[in-house]
Amino acid sequence: MTTTDVAQTQQPVAEGLFTWPPTADRPTRLIGSECVDCGLVSFPAAPDCVRCASANSKERLLADRGTLWTYTTQDFRPPSPPYDGPDAFEPYAVGYVELPGELLVEARLTEPDPRRLRIGQAMRLTLVPYTVRDDGTEVVTFAFTPDEESADPEEETA
Image (tube, rainbow, N blue to C red):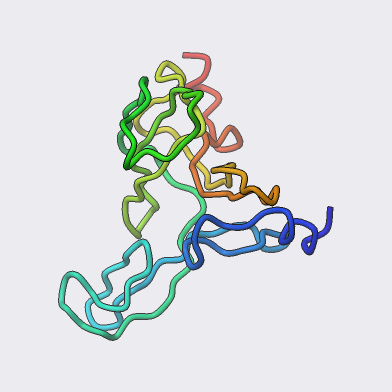
């Protein structure tokens, strides 16, 4: 499937949250902002700084790997609204992932089993399905998944 095909059959949940479309030489990155005056990094990108109120910010692509700072699981279907997911509910996890030297990002986690998650675990950014529109277009959003490539082999055998 080509990038053009992906763009026609998938679309991001919102413009400006992450780079789109992903390609082999340009993987998905979250789009944040950095205050030019005080250096605060924000996600999602914000035109004004919440720390110093400066309107002088610049776009910044955030790290695509981080560390699981904390998490919780959602084991029952939340009320609607605000929940707008499918009627057939499947448990999921959400957490804060610390992007080194940047900030904590609240995000859905791809691993719903709390026994397979641990604070300090290496995580990487990924895209996951959010919903399918009536025209068949799949809407995708960002999430973090355990980063098996960065796992410490000694930790896994301990």
